[in-house]
Length: 388
Image (cartoon, rainbow, N blue to C red; front, side, top):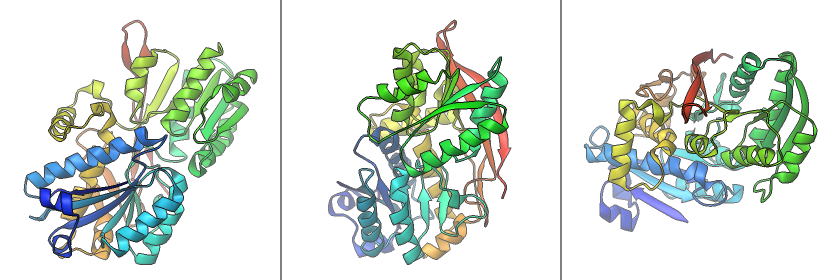
């Protein structure tokens, strides 16, 4: 499936980008998991990114020029991501590639981006280690979650929350970055005085999480930590509860988390994250809701923060790119960028020459308060400096 989003005109939407249009605007290419079992995590990011850039163009564009967004559906398939990247670079002459998909799609897109010297921006897709200091010159990421830091925040909370020795179960999806992170968490847990008792890796997709949850439960953990796409995290938790396990479960707060916290209503189901939830009712949440309504987005507003942030980042990067734009000029602008996120995170997102992740990461923790019958913040912003 191919989605062409050329926000300058309806004619562009129906006909696709012509060379003259590309010369008159900024062309950005996206390869995303718009369909498939993980689409609920990734498609809303692209929809919100599109809606925000529509909004920007309606106000006159960037530096008086429109943004043309070309979206290809890779279905979380590496081979499709590879063909998307080749097509977007060779035919559409994009200034930047955007990946919003599983980490299994990264390698082919990285290879094509390096071959062409085009920046590759991970938006809604987990940040690869190459975006951390010392960063790869062409790879950038604004996605909320980040390897190693997330596990530090999650297990740090468990250590403070636990009232006795921690017997830790670990769960992840069988994709490269998730497996690496859960292995890191296993080692980190030992340094924190915790005892890892079992680690379950589930294939994507998994129709039934019961066998994996059974093995976890049989290891008798009193806490479980999961770091994976949301479907794997929440279904592993629900399978554990169906089996009668009643320990604490902490997991990453993907864009689906706020809705599912309210659905599950379990006080021992904790999410750790770096994006403010809509329960905070910030002014920017009203702005996101208005833009989503204008764009007729069907996803809940709570699903849209990550895509809105991606739009803010693209807007800021393009504003700082001299006209006429080239991938090299855009890469230079992205290497010295500071973006005001309007309170959606604990601080601004800042990229430097050697750090294409961010200089500081801020974490909160939430759960469901059964007494007040609402989501409750368990921990306010905790800062972790991102260093080499």
